[in-house]
Image (cartoon, rainbow, N blue to C red; front, top):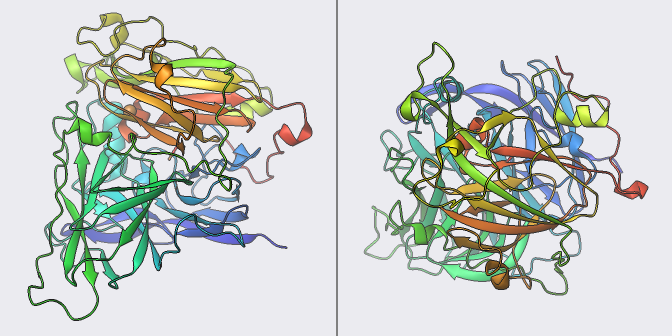
Length: 548
Ligand code: C2O
Ligand code: CU
């Protein structure tokens, strides 16, 4: 039967927030953009039209697209951008994912406003591994800039200073009534006492991990990144940019009004950050108790720099790992990788004035290589597929240039400056990979929500400080580790992930803090074809956007 089509018109639309109006880039004039509802195993076609004045690409975050990187939408990695006036029909193949994912633009900073939810329901005849909720609600956390995000991005890369901070966080596109001019710009969830709500949470913010809670209510986490977890109940969640969570809310409190609130977790590096709290309202239907609060109850959230709270979720996530939801953690590792993630500086180009430390510009790196995108003439997938040389080299190192005390306070100055290059790591089909990602204290440590395209991975271990290759593997969870596509490397700490390469193609990996990505905290994997035709890339669609 014919595949379902969705139409995405990328275009400017005026929105008023925080007392002023500006044009923002949207899909179909909506902000956040439309929610895609699909079933596990379904394939859809999204017809993306670029009616904007900027180049654009659209990425399906956490959708692994088996054998079909052509639709991944990663600018200059898997495609050249859709030019203004252009169009690209993207085939989005849902295979193993089930739960909440999202889509977003993947070019410069356009994802600030070009994003939306993806809800993957169980395949026909299957049910959730928890009692069916009475209602489902996407909760998308975002950020609002009064200034144009194109300018925020340009400043970041040209003057090389730290990124401008947003003017508020958003819940479903709204700042909430604690912000000026925003009493009508407050998302409201009306609930029925006794009902259960499945909150499909997405952190679409650009810059910060967020704390989120609902006053007087507990939250039960049942899934993350399009995969279920053993339910666990918390007072607040910590969610990193890029991450998604399925959260059950039981409306079991007196008929009243309660704030849901989100605010940033920010470790030392960003001395200046948006420390405002954004709110939405949970309002019970029916006749309210006499003490009905016109001022809703406010939840308490951890303080902005509470590092122990920043890891409250990662330490509790466990896969279901039951018969209907089997897991497959690689046990015999063929490929051991160790990547550092750092914030560095590069010399300021001659004649310009840079705003980074010591008059330099900020940069970021993995294994001390700052990722350089190919120019707009070509992308890596096209170069790989057509054997075009000179676009990238295959020298991305398996270990950092030097072992050092990664989280110490006096790091060797030669590490301050990364090299700048387009290097990929080639992996054979069927490799079993263990990748340890180590945060460093270069400039100052911070969290890095690392995201891999094309493959989900098991998070088998994490810790603070330097990874210890003798002791730490003994503490791995190889029984029921969570299956994710984004994992926050703790400040001055490490995570260990495992995955098997079963998806041929070109797959980006990067930090989902937008400033770090813009500065080069990224690398690219090429997963080669397997021997069996079922393990090989499908051919590209005829309408791949042209490179100019
Ligand atoms: Cu959510 Cu490379 O992206
Ligand atoms: Cu980062």
